[in-house]
Every structure is written in C-alpha cells, then in structure tokens.
Image (tube, rainbow, N blue to C red; front, side, top):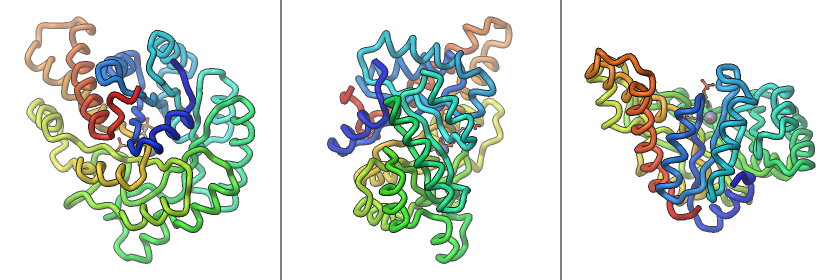
Length: 307
Ligand code: G3H
Ligand code: 13P
Ligand code: ZN
C-alpha cells in the first residue's frame, strides 16, 4: 500500500526506530527490496535519484513501484531522492507517482534554500505529498581538517530549527559526518553525535541520515574475490547506525550497499558459471544478495515487524 513519508516517519519517531530508504535503478532491485520487506514485515521507502530517472525513466520506475505497492499490505513510500533541479522536483510532484520528494537545496545560500524549499513544500502538501529537505554538506568527517571547517559544513542546529520552522518541511537530512559512496572513512567510522543530539533537541520533525551504507565485510569480500577493486572501501559501522537511530534518526539512506551486493552477486555467478548467458540466471544471485542486505538493515534500523 502506497503511503506518505510523513506518516511512516512520524510512526517511526514515536516508536524510536528508523525506516530504510533504498535506491533503485531497475526491476530487479525493486523485487529484491520487496522480498526483504515482506520477509521482515517492514515498512520501506523506495528511492529514485535523478540518475536513476535518467537511466530508467520516471514513468517506468513509477509503474513498477506502484505495482509492487498495490500488491503489498505493507506501507511503501515512493520517494524522489536528492532532487536538486527545482523543475524535476515539480515534475515529480505533478507526475502522480511519488508520495514523497526530497528537495536538496543544500548547496544554495541559506535564504535561497529556505525560499525554494518553502515553495515546493506548499506545492507538494496541496497534493498530499511529503517533502524532505537538506541543510549542511553531506561529505565525510575526514574531509574537514579543522573544527571550524566542520562547523561551516555540518548542519548548524540553530539554523536547522529556523529552517524547519520557515519551510514546514516534513523531514530534514542533516550532515554529521557521513558521505555518499563506498569510501567514507580512512580510519574507523566516526560521527558527530553531539551535534545530532543538539539538532534533535531543537527540531521536532523526523531526521534523515544520508550516506549511511556500512560496506558489509562479507559482501565486500565476495566482490574482491571476484575481481572488484574496492579494498579501501569503508562505511558507517552498525554500532554507529544503531547509536544514530537511538539519538533520533528516523530515515536511513542506503545505495552503495545495494550496489556492492548487486556487483558481488553478478561477479561471483559469472566467474563460477562462465558458460551461462541467460540474464535471468545471472541476475538471480544479485537479487538474493540485495534481499539479504536489506533484511539485515531492516533489523538493524528496528523497522522489522513494524509494517
Ligand atoms: O545519494 C545519492 C545516491 O547514491 C544516488 O546516486 O545519483 O548515482 O544514482 P546516483
Ligand atoms: P550511500 O552511498 O552511503 O549508500 O548513501 C546513499 C544516499 O544517501 C542516498 O541518498
Ligand atoms: Zn543521499
């Protein structure tokens, strides 16, 4: 059943757990995530980036997600991830597919981010669609050598309070040291939990953690054994994800972990079965590995059995 981000996340906030938002680019990823959601009885957010829409098309992905959602009794959110182009966010709102959109104005000056977000929130709310917004730069903690540099890039708690009051957005993505992609930390995972606590105390709406992939060791090992060069990949530890959720994160975004699961499945199958040319056989193990990873995340975030 399709539902809004705000209904799923308000429930998660009350229950002190987080719901995973998983990026998809094709039919197989949608199927694998739905198998995981049904097995764990978990609500789920299915996200499409601008890149995913360029690759597969908004109507194509919208049709597939709607079909999956009407066949399920679980709460399913169909979400536009990181809409940076206002025109694309408007198109997504008007398309009839999405129950939630993210407007990412984080690279804009604060005033402009507030102005553009507020306008899109008004437009989306008229159609019963939720809006996630972003404040602060989601780039790794190790990108900033000094405390001053961190303060300038991570989400400022007071600004977050003002931003949410003025824009009336439904969820806020914050920067506390995570980054997108498979190379997040040179050393151990480390996040600014004090900042998260301060933001949580000032902002009442659900908070979102982007760049939250963990790069699970077992999946990374399969990739490397079968030729993928990702030796230095490092993600956020499970312990830190758990702590972030306990301190008030209610949406956790995962893309890279699905990519390496897909990659591991395809590489292993092809190297062990060089005579097979059937795409259905080649992609089967990739789907199974994605399902495994998503099930593990649902348990970790606490959303299992909450659907
Ligand atoms: O947050 C970004 C996601 O990982 C999407 O990546 O733009 O390559 O689809 P993409
Ligand atoms: P990862 O690259 O850590 O999976 O982050 C994904 C994300 O934040 C999508 O919006
Ligand atoms: Zn993101």
